Structure formats: C-alpha cells, structure tokens
Length: 70
Image (cartoon, rainbow, N blue to C red; front, side, top):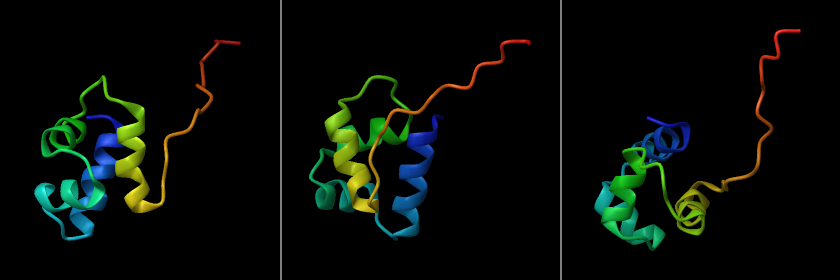
C-alpha cells in the first residue's frame, strides 16, 4: 500500500470515523475513499487533496532520491 493510502487510513481511524462517516464529512464519495485507502494508483489529485485537507495536509512535489552509484 502506498504512503498516502496508509496515512489517510491511519488518520481516519485515529479520528474514530468509519469510511462512510469520513467520506461524508470530507465531501467525497465512499467508493473514492475506499479505493484511495486501498492504494489505487490513479486518482484525481483535487479529490485526494480534499481528503487530506481534513488533516491539514495536501499533496506536494517531492524530489526523488536516486542512488547514482557514485
């Protein structure tokens, strides 16, 4: 499972919310939230940010660390 999926699922559970409750409060569909928590590889970033905003987070570019063997 990917990092975003793990984070959202963990924070939702810490908040004591079911998927249904969280989807309703964040304004996304239950199916979208379920797929997001399961690590679906293709998602609308605006919807992901809508979910992350419940925890005061958003997606942002991050530099990839590459092992160049130097």
